[in-house]
Length: 629
Image (tube, rainbow, N blue to C red; front, side):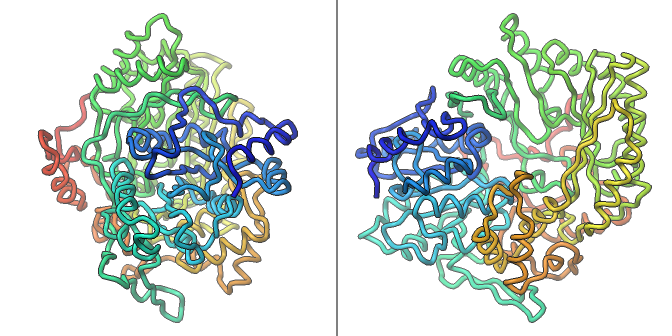
């Protein structure tokens, strides 16, 4: 194993030969390099994407902050090197290292991957290989790191089961400390690797796939999933943080320009809207909000610690934050005259008040984003995101009146029961929005239509439905291109091959791990980058493993089918999700959970957690009073 000094020497010879060497040198403002020898547990946190994207990942920031607050542990970071750097690293036998200390990942006790989306799977294998860590969990010895993954994509962990020693299901702020404590109590030499994994399996929210067996029927569907040892629970329920801890504020300031160069403060977690296609909204229940005072305090600290001139308030539905108007007014007043811009992602059309738009006007960017998701009222009922067309147009009119020139509209094609008329309505609605803009600000008005394709996600009411076929997707995209030819309407869409790859991986079972490995061995990596996505490698990998991609994408699931993720629970009941799916077939809409509780299952679990938090009310926020107007 190379020492940090040896890695440093080799880096000095190669860094000027690659694009953006600043990706690989570390030493950023607010990064921490703790004493290696005094730490009992060393954690390498890895985001399997390039530095330009990964350094702003909020989950990584939270875990970096949590671990480094401990006196007995340290956390350092690593990212996927771009293809030019990887080539030179392999040629010069430089293992993947952390930016803080230049130590190889293989020297750490824990290597933790944050995997928010499925197209990072092959990058994850590539990083393990580049680090000199066996990609298969079964081939790792007692002295090698425990490899753990978390993130939204791991709510179905089975496609990556062969490569991970353990998965964190749910939220990481508390469970990371339980994992560190467990591994300190079961060190190599004191406990075998198998014994350490059994101990981890006893931690709520930790899934150890090697301790489970999956039986299948002849047609490939699942007969049963069962634990092999007493330490492994039959169902692994997601970890929920009862009270959100103070958000990190000493953000790392990158040495190079990155994709999202802003200070991000999470204002709330969870969502009560119940959109049937939205996995994030289902798996992050219940809603927990930070107070205005805490958010403002964190924002001030973040700006002071970083010097960044853009604040972003993170949530799934920023305008649903109970005190959003007070927050924006307070922030605007606090940073008056300091040229700080404010970004509020995920604005709901039906909760974008005129007062909020007026307040944001002073600190806006160039565009305003809304997400109708569907263009007909019938489809919006099916997906449980009902908004009348008149309200969309009225909101657009008010946005243009406040001198925004561009409105970005997000739509999704491929929803269950969608027709070509529903797709054509997307073009019609975009034209109507543009017409409203032209009435108000003339030819300066612009519309940007972003079109993604629906993928039925695990743990959602639509997990029983199938994806559109390639032909259906291409027909719908061609229709939109034909209908939207106005030069003031920009159209962008997700490539069909990218949609299907996501669908294969998000709905995959354990057999998909063989496909992932085979595709990686054929050169698949950076699958989210169009120029590097190798669809032929994936097709060959499916064929070599005797699997049909359509089994995972174009097959509706019967009500009683056991899903590959059946043993993973978000605390939202499966029968509730199925009932909601059946209601979608009739176009029935569920109201916001803050207005009526539908007994999804989260309340009993969350109530128990709140009782264990001294001084905290344990009434579920999902059934408190409705949002303020």
